[in-house]
Length: 50
Length: 405
Image 1 (cartoon, rainbow over the protein chains, first blue to last red):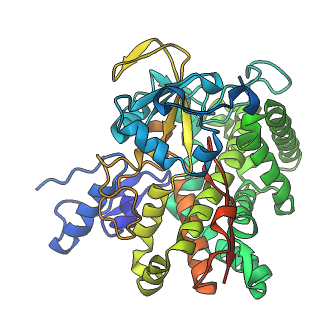
Image 2: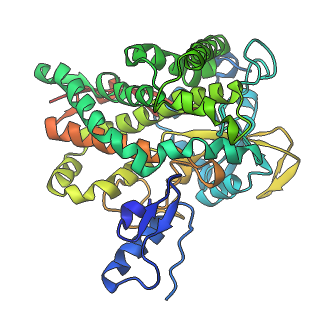
Image 3: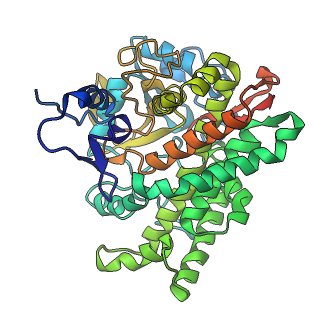
């Protein structure tokens, strides 16, 4: 789900488990998409540190 | 207590006597779900169909899904089996990993996840698109068709047959077997057993064939050859094949069918999707939320009290993902389809360790099926809304849905 909402930020490994593609701070233009991914994660598994 | 006759009769209070196979509930379950959810008993109980609990609030369904040690998956069908699984010619063939509990669940799931990863299912997009176009070619000139039987029903079975490396020409038989197990068979134990035997017998032959003639890039061959990593048995491989067929076909076909039924009645949504193709990702999630097809069961492992309900070891809980996905505590305006809904943490694919392994494939099939339909048939409507028929209980979706265009 996160890789659909924010494909620049999230990918998936060979098992289909989500991975974070961008290490460290996200560029400002991706904040909105990252928040959208967080709000739609069915497992509530995304934490955004600010 | 396993037949329609034994369980028939009017329902006076759904919080103590719901009937998941009541014709009105099968057709439109949402008013009853709402009534239970907003009552003093949001986790209803009924003695019908062998007895079950029915949680309707999002928070409760998710909590139960997370507590997999107490709420086990040793049986996931919404009604009890007529004969225990440990008996008969096909004893021990289950449907791993959906019917597995930890610790085996881990490797049962680990082995099948790679075939369903987003990058792995992407290779089915073009062939699914071609298939959808071919299906529409067959009826488009007549100006009408059945969105369920001529289209939705025909798509997932062929995709799954391709994945499993079994003959696509047998699609009608596969569909009939799956309906025999998950639809008609739920209220007719004899039909259920016959079709289960057909499925297992078929896959036993496929396993024997792969042992004699191993294939390259073949799921069944690869599973049989995974014994170096995990304690793989024939029963496990049979179970996985059984699951992929049973869980991969009428679930997705129901989602496609319900979505087309919705679009047939909502010209504004057809227009919105045609004008804004960037809406597709959220639209697919919203249709999955609003028309979640699947209800799975859990079996209580030991006596426990959950939200004030005295649950006993062996009790069945019906995980109503459709009810959870319309809970106003979780979703604003839950009964409306909002194609660009911002917050949509829906549980159409379940939650926790048993979250649907095939969700990426299901999403792809649903999106492509709807995109191709709207490209070819931009305007359409139900011929007779009252003539649409539905299946329900375990998997909810239209079975006859004639449209004119």
